[in-house]
Length: 259
Ligand SMILES: [Zn+2]
Image (cartoon, rainbow, N blue to C red):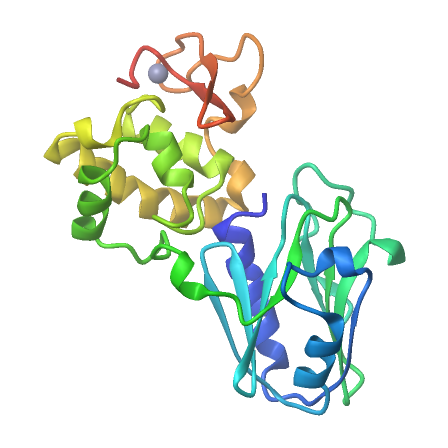
């Protein structure tokens, strides 16, 4: 958390600031800057400039300022506040309280408005001109052919592949388990062992699950979510869920219908 769904909401909220002139930018600590970005560079690039387009690739929010781009990653608990309004009030794993000390990055506009990142755990970061070529296609925009190609070329488990932001962008742990559960594929399946039908199903569930969960209110609103605990059962067939570590992440899945 936050995953593609949440960052897309942040992007939409941030579009309200397009065209405004930036009067100041501040960062809580150099630790919140990605290596290679200094606060002096950030200030010299943005002060007095207008905020241009606002884009997103996967979980990375991109704010265009002149010829520069500010990349914002939200880590585990980051939320965007635009003109004092918190974009998502009920984010899992975080406090909903807004505390001044948790504001890591903020942009002030000459009209008095602000765009700020509040991140209690502080695992997110800000980077000037991030290398966008390191990211795979956005999960919401990947074609079935594109997905087939990354599957065929991957010796990793499907869970690891879906979480690998260099191959496909925007899917985090909760979304991944929900996609696999809906697709009926075990998280430990080797990607290139998937047959044509299975690839088609997963590619369709990647988009379908994102769209459905966005409507339901976020990445934590999956059908599997309430059963991610000891003694949890599959909402589809009632079979006890298994918990295992796949790709270094806790995975909940159904050994009955996920093959
Ligand atoms: Zn099941």
